[in-house]
Length: 421
Image (cartoon, rainbow, N blue to C red):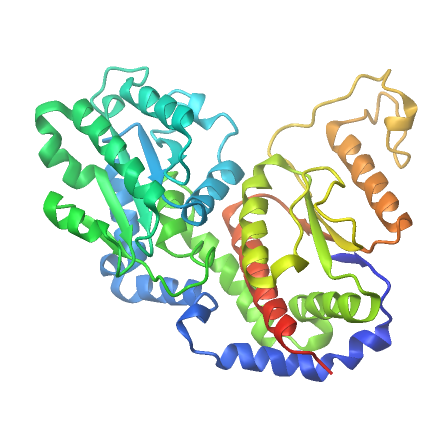
């Protein structure tokens, strides 16, 4: 993290004692809404101790049991429940995963998202697509599954969508529908969900209990997010391990080296001393855009109007007030570097590299130049900028990034409610 801010070292050190106390208060808070802090560790330990009886064990059983039986899966739920799965799908899968053949996908299912709005045309188009088979003739390519997320039972959009998708699946399965639906529909339900009656009536084999006491978007590392991760063949263990690493850093690292405490302290000083209460996130890599939307919801729900909407390679915001700009950058790419035409105008090239045959200009160079130019313009406009760089996009790094956002946002929520002296 490389900050560019108008906060003095003395100001930053003056917050050491209250920030450490704030950390202790968070650690000591055992309320259900704070369970996200220890959830990744508890899930790993439960799997180590009781294996198949744990949430992770059940998730692996469901995901592995469906790989050879289906070619697609639909995640139905309110936006907060769908964003977790959508984030992992876009971040870790091939950008055109759903267009690849079954063999090219390694038998991992195509994944679609619905049930969070009343968009008639998009829902109808997805139902039509699901009614079609895959490219092959195997039984798996003629079947698909439904995963429903319903924490509080209040999502009318999800319940209405489920009616249509169940009907579509029944038509697809024909005479075998009654038995197959028991295995091809997986429910993740809160204690008050109205779909529990549906689960009993249909004899659904797997119903995951999820908490409706966590704040919106806090269940990203619960079975809500982990089941889609496993179904896509991604590494759940590394995802949770990354989150555990960040929690350990937050709870044990002293203030001077604690990235989370110092990040939040800087934000507090910018708000209290400089009047910079709003923030904007610029995501420079398309695979992370869904997680930027998830963070947007998280920040808005916990920090109120101090959070501005995300920008995607742009400086546009919903407010003209001074703001902190946070650039989220991925250091390395999964694909080979694309080379830019040597006749590209020189003003677009990176000044740090010579443009010759031995050192051709690449898309990465162009992005670096664009990031630098935008950051310089931001600072020149009197707005501080901070950069969060992750080495690569994989489940371990995502686990770290998600937990970092969850903890920093919770700290900011508490600081918004009481002044630090």
